[in-house]
Image (tube, rainbow, N blue to C red; front, side, top):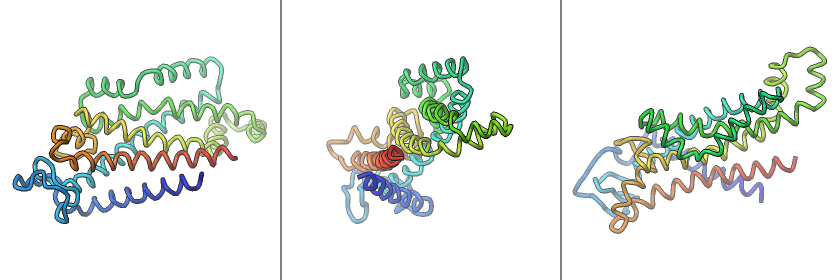
Length: 265
């Protein structure tokens, strides 16, 4: 079952990554090309996923939208990973009052609804992809920090750490060169699950009009634009909805499978 989850997740993600890679060099139609005569055309060999209210090819827009999803997800996870691991590592290794204060701040951030924080952030600093990435990245810091801290609390009592201390290794060397390589597994698992959350957050913000701005396509924004026409052109909403679901499922399957393997160690 564990390997099955990893296999399913990997197959889904490889397919989506391949689609994203192809979209960099080729799409069936330009994503901004309008053809009012073909608006709301149903799926056909000419337009595999049909067209939208401006006659734009939905398949082409879904393909370009995959770039947005992976780009936002990857950068947001990187921000959360970098700062979260740094905070968690220092907190777990140093301990004491520093650990208490740091973790209470992380708990407060976790208690605050992530999407509400993102809404406040983009409302203050403005809409757009840069602020969307920053907001989602900040939202993910506490989860990475807690996972890292938990691992460091365990490993700092292990013999190899005590041996490094006895040999005169500095705290920073122990934190980043001795312990960190041994706690990467739970961090990787957390990253895959964090990617799924980042994709959903980006889709939610774009759906509300606060993420990626027109004319560049985003799956969340496509859902927003399609809801008015759901009764006459259901394919308009189905395509981006299916791909959001596939991407989130892919990372969740992969993360769950890796988590199960980690629990067996």
